[in-house]
Image 1 (tube, rainbow, N blue to C red):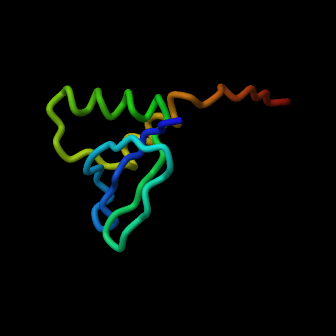
Image 2 (cartoon, helix red, strand yellow):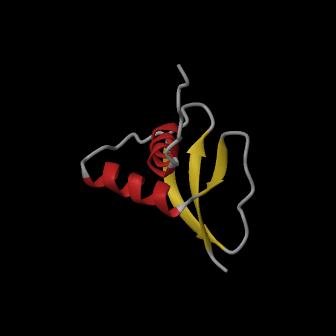
Length: 78
């Protein structure tokens, strides 16, 4: 099965490209390969379509996690 991976610069944390492989590519001293979730990919495509050219892995995954967070039920007993 082919999976997608973000190729990310270790020094800046910016996504360089997306690659699709049957197995995870090997990391290098300057690059890491991060599996892509569908929500992260959609967020990346939104940034790219809006003209962003430096997209960080943190901005894509942080927003994806926030969008998928389950609401927390809480109650306060007074």
